[in-house]
Amino acid sequence: VILSYLEDRFGDGRFILANVEDRALVQLFVRIHDIYISSPNCTQPNFSHTQGCMYLDPYPTKYTPERRTMPNPIVRASKLKEIYERLCWLEQNIQSDYMVGDSITHADITWYPTCIFMEILLPYVFGWAPIFHEKDHFPRLTRWFETCSSNEHFASVRDDISGVL
Image 1 (cartoon, helix red, strand yellow):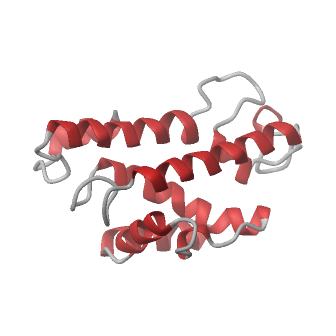
Image 2: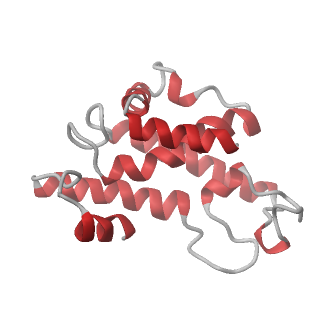
Image 3: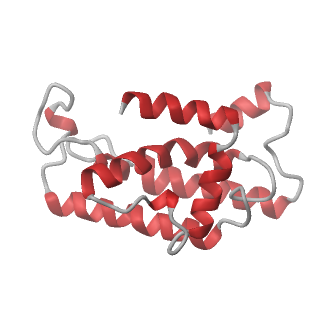
């Protein structure tokens, strides 16, 4: 919603694809991210977004208040499985060097920062292989990540995020 508002308010249309089917696919990529990865879809204590499994503490700390903890290891494992399943979905559905089409869209802008967290935290916290840097299991995802990382604006975001993690 925020990206669409900013595009409508200040954009020049460069992130909007001409083909209606491609625009719908971009929206699907964004929705998959927002629903399955970044949104807890609930505000009750101990409910968290899927990506929280990478960094929310299992008990209260100075960084994680009680209501934000993820104390149940089964919940954490389920959320980690969800991340893997969404990465597999991305691998199956990425169309080219960018997620949809041959230029940056809201899909790339939405997913890239989250994938930086995954790039750093999945190996660090869970011992995963460097998922965005291997071509055997996730060649499309790797190519997409490399393409985005070569863009100066995306690279700046990556530097900012990795600088604080």
